[in-house]
Image 1: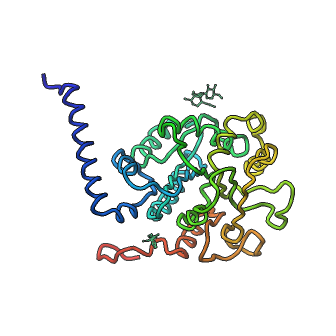
Image 2: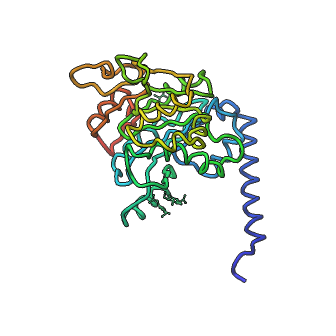
Image 3: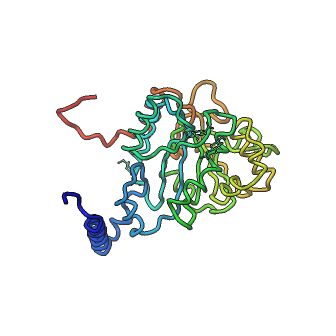
Length: 310
Ligand SMILES: *[C@@H]1O[C@H](CO)[C@@H](O)[C@H](O)[C@H]1NC(C)=O
Ligand SMILES: *[C@@H]1O[C@H](CO)[C@@H](O)[C@H](O)[C@H]1NC(C)=O
Ligand SMILES: *[C@@H]1O[C@H](CO)[C@@H](O)[C@H](O)[C@H]1NC(C)=O
């Protein structure tokens, strides 16, 4: 009789949960403000943080940031993960950053990606074959209601869902401030394209990063029209669904705060860094990432030490 009985196991678990509950309760009563300020951005959810979040005050809104990338892009994922982990102190919003790809295809991916998931738990693998303009975005949006349902119960899991790529850097606090007062329904947010003719009848939000409210995600998941029209440049295709379905009436164009990394010549969609930036796009290599992160003081908090010099 060396194996602990089921009874013992479950009572240990309830004891741990009860202790956690009491600690959280005490913490909440004594330090309500600290509790509120506690980070709501999770790149490493654990059962304890999930549990504590249900005790803490409700965030203004919840946003899922889905970064569409490829299983083999380990180095880029590492960099992007760090860029967001250093912005984990966004106040009064819950922002979950996740990397999204299709079926794994190589033996090594099944081990290396499994390790990443075990450590970071920030990866979503969809049931599809990798592609850029052949329906991956459709699979992303249309899978979410199904795969998130079991996790979050009856309440809608997010207010907003973003689709972005691994060459865009979002400044999460500015993003959160811009979203906070916007409608939670029928909302389509991003950088309106074509840049020089925003009144164009077929304008859409650029694939650098756009946000849909949850009702639109559900509409995509349940409508025939998007299902039957998946092929084409993904951002333009998303815009065409909304237009054809008469959806996304609350459109918000973040012109000037969202732009491409500056290189000559300057264009309508491309300019120098500005302080109130929401997103910088076309970060195609490490130097561009580093230049951008430096401008926004991402590594400013580094403590001096005898152990290193930069
Ligand atoms: C979050 O932390 C960064 C780096 O420490 C700091 O520059 C920034 O002001 C903080 N933001 C908020 C909203 O506290
Ligand atoms: C995955 O997609 C394939 C092909 O589209 C389909 O036949 C299969 O049923 C799907 N599997 C699941 C678990 O949804
Ligand atoms: C993706 O992988 C799953 C599980 O191995 C499989 O059932 C599915 O058919 C695959 N889907 C595609 C589109 O290849």
